[in-house]
Image (cartoon, rainbow, N blue to C red; front, side, top):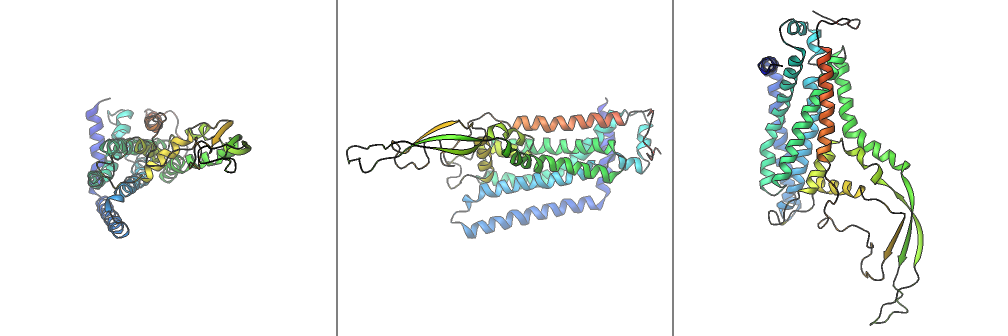
Length: 357
């Protein structure tokens, strides 16, 4: 595969997009929306909190999630019609008639679509940098978030490219790409919630209370233990369903690289950090028997097995956001390979109604 050929195809695709005024209007509107969103939320935080720094982590999380969400909406429009759309316009056959290989055509179109998606990310970068400087996130978390955004958007573009090559109608490939995105973003937590009914169990709890009638100022007496059975959900068996979700990957990285108090003493646990800690708690196994001692831990109304507050909690399990990237990247690579095979010439058999030139 020649990279000069890939660059030629990518330049041709980008020139078609740049010449379109709709593309320029979309970037301008995107920038205006970010200014209004970030400026409005900052002004609102200044009127509702004593210290604006308290809301900076929330503003950062909202911005990075908003960028990812809009990117997942825009990315399919950049690639899901790139192959079957050219085939319908009778321009794809011109490329296939040249010395270009099918891999070069597909990768060139992917680079063009990926670059267009990165343009939207580039517009949002100043806002993310400002919030990070203000203490909204650590620089390590920002770097990981950008990596997740770049890989996820590129993989979605590749998935759209594969579906564009596999279907004859541009509308069908666009709908299928959006369905794949919906499965990753909405389907994974929905499947996890539905699966909780299949992993329910019972837990025997032995609880010790203080016998205040028998206790004195110098001696605390524990009463007879109380035994009861509670229904529990073994979420450690189903949490892995959230791994392909890009928002879960953002949350996992945020929970492991939290803002240091010396950088922003007013910062509280951000929404992404709370989500990441929640997923980390899902990975804790639920034992069949547990002992809760309120007698020797007077004042602790949650028992020894309960987690600490969000300010002192830390993620204890292995990081999984790299696995999320591998899964999404594998989907994109497989789609790109399928698209390349569909563009090989000569084609021995075409589907009925497929336009060649």
